[in-house]
Image 1: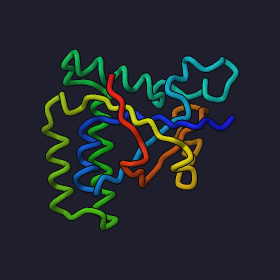
Image 2: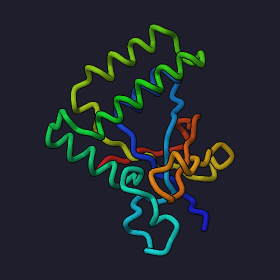
Image 3: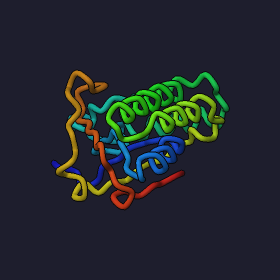
Image 4: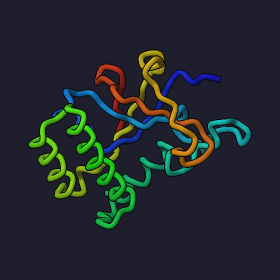
Length: 161
C-alpha cells in the first residue's frame, strides 16, 4: 500500500541552514511511516530500523537535548551529515566557499538547543515524482526509505511535541 504521507525528523539547525543558505529548499531522508514499531509485524514498514525511524530519531534527539548530552551519538551524526552536505553543496556550486565555512562554524559551535528535533510531515502527492528510493545497501535495514533533494517549504508542515 502506498502511504499518502511521508515523515522526516530533522534538527532545527538543519532547517535553519537550509532555509538560509539554500533558499528554503531542503534535503531530507524520509519514511512512509512515523513509527515503524506501530506497524503490523508482517507489514513492510515494520522493517524500518530504529536509526531510520522518524519517531525513534525524534525521541532520541528530544531525550539528548533534555539531558544536555554533549556526547550524543545522534547529534554527532547530525553534525557529520551537515558538514558533508555543506561540502557537497559547495562542490555543486549551490553555496559559496564563505557559506560553507559559515555552515561548518555553526555546526561545530551551536549550543545543544539548536539540535532540537522537528518532524516534517510531507504529503506524498506533492513530491512523488522527486522521491528517490535509497539503495538497499545504504538503508539501515530492509525497510523502505527515501530521500528528497529539493523539498520546498510549502510542501511540508513542521510539528514539534
